[in-house]
Image (cartoon, rainbow, N blue to C red; front, side):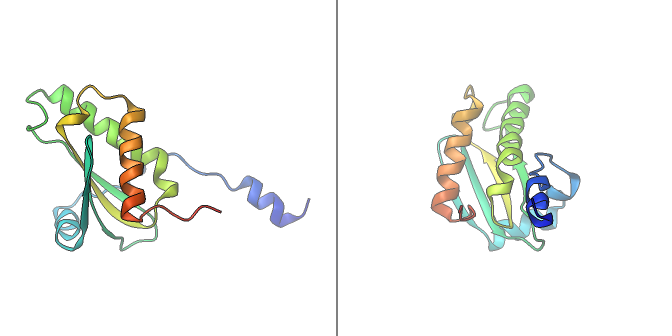
Length: 130
């Protein structure tokens, strides 16, 4: 086995969600809403714009329209965060804002993930797979 082959084997996908991968500032959210495009499904909608960095970043919104109960809104955000965390390696470098829709209440992770991946395919933000 050559050195290059070993590096490829050792090169792992990291399924973490670090601080620098989050959209936190209001200016970042405003830029994505202003410059970005939007797509919507039954469980999630999202806005996306080209990222200023070389990796995808995400922000999450679950308003009181979803539910008055914080527990339900927090679960919606957890589901969306998990979808991003496990699929970010498949995304082009974009800033993306996930918005929970009423349909997310009571859904399982797989249903939310499928909805997002279908929308991402339509939007053209998934990387080409060899």
